[in-house]
Length: 399
Ligand code: AMP
Image (cartoon, rainbow, N blue to C red; front, side, top):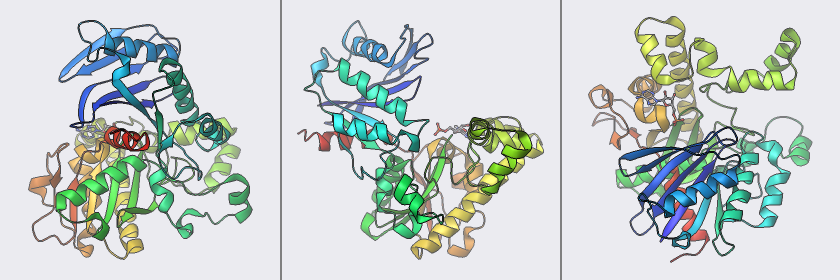
């Protein structure tokens, strides 16, 4: 049985066709520049093929994708009917959807009513779902898997902000948390790797990529996370500022003459690593620049390491202990420097990184701590698509 996994942005569409009998990836790729000109980078096994195909809309991108999968010498299936279901990543499910669910018209209207909770992501997700439903026949179940669902177990004391309570009642302002599929996957996977039941473990998962968040996972349930109402809170990220004194917002609007769009741009697109370093949002380039003596690149790395240390320490306290810290995402999986900085001060909770193991380690499932380290730290490459495919199979009740 095959499941198509879709992760759509406003001008791009990532896809993965998964064979569920052995959970292998048949083909994957990216349709990008939707609405501009259009390009598909398609990958089958190790082979990458680029196609320039104009698609003015998501619907045309889906049509091209289906053509690519079913026709020509690179076809991987003979007919669309081989696709048993489609699973969509949806960033914000609000507090209405605490689990993955079958997509219905009613769900889409609920999602439309909460787009202001994720204005950068949900409209694109909804548009892509509608486009996909037009291309696939009605008989093919479409399932939504929410980034927020995994965090629906966070207790009230961690999700209510100390602002007037009516703001929560009126506008649903609360911590939702994001990257849920990734935190869920790596926390479950590290339990398997450690040979212990997840129900007995306290895990802190650090998803570090262009967007980054840390989660406290107690006995398999998320009990706190760094992202909040939107994916802007928490760690400083590639171009996002993360948590700052809220007064900075009105102060800067005043001093720099910024309107809401201006301040939103500053916080979402001009801050984080890019803002501090003045160079780039790309961690690889920052590490290289820091190595060559660029002081603000080095400062950017120090800030991230320090913030991670604080969140890990804080979440360990929140859970009354921690058994394992997990690093994932482009930075978490690949940056030995950031992992080392994050763990440098954690000796007091019994976590010691083995430099020989950590140095140069990229994208492999490995325990990076010394043998006698009481608290373990692991690198676990994430696999959000697999979580989406598994949930889709379950929700669509496919055998
Ligand atoms: P993601 O959003 O998960 O794709 O992560 C993107 C981030 O991972 C970017 O900042 C990349 O620079 C960073 N990254 C990817 N590979 C490496 C690497 N080998 N070393 C350091 N950072 C990396």
